[in-house]
Image (cartoon, rainbow, N blue to C red; front, side):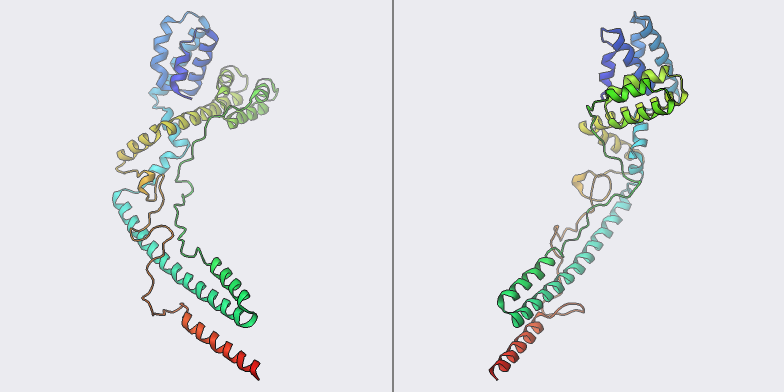
Amino acid sequence: MKLDVLLGGLENPQPAVRLDVVRVLGMLDETRALDALRRCYPAETDPDVRNALAWAGKRLYQAQQAGYSTIDELFRFFNIDKEIENTPDDSEQQLLDKMADSLHQDLLSMQERAHKKKVGLAIAAGLAGGVVAGASVGLTMLAGGLASGADASSTGMGGRPQIGTTRTPPTAPANTEITIWLRRFRESPAPEQREQAAIQLCELNNPKALPHLAAAFLNDDSPQVRQAAQRYGKILYWRAVYWEMEQNGTIAEEMMRRAAAMGKTIRTPKSGPAGIGGSMPLPDSAAPGTPAAGPAQGSTPEGDVDVGEILRKAKEARQARHRKQGR
């Protein structure tokens, strides 16, 4: 939900709409609306709306003096600040890039050797099958062995977020039907039931619940319900603001601004490194799925399979079988 949508509601010709908007802004402690409330108060003619403007204006002023900010709370709640804090600075990032390059080279080399071994074993199995059971069985065994090792050179080195250090992805506001839960929220006799209804309204993620939560925040007899109405109303609002900021790019701008204030640089997803929105980079010499350069031709390091030796032994076995059949 855009803030300017709420602010536009302050100019609505219907007093009931203006009252709902003022109550919502007061419940949310949306300090960015304070100037708008000040402008509206002298011209407001409806006594209920005027009283609500005075109440909300006082709350927002106190919240502003206390340093409260919707954006700060949003960054805290969705773990965005944690992600910025855990972003390495430039020198740390250079070191991480070098470590990532070295790790990729080592891993690709290891997987290339494993791939060669699987291919060698597949050839051996195919030849052995051909010797024992004929050409068709041998080819089948060879194809199966090669298929099982076809992806051995893939590194699988995509970026993996660390739990607790990456932000929660934004979710789009929903238009889910909330009538049943609104009725339970207003009419359930037990405070615990009304509190659970407030939680459910938040989970349904429909901003249309905000005026009803604000009304309960002002008027419910139970402090437990009033507290729940504000808490889950704020979360519902933060989700809508977060989604809007993600769509128009202002969330990335704010993240970069905050990172710069900490002496850090946030890399965009296009730049590729591990960190905010990125993945671990591949070394310049290797594209995804491309094996690193293996040992020189003819060398047989420990663990590699000598395919020529396998072919020689298979030929000898076939000749021995023919001699036996000739007898």
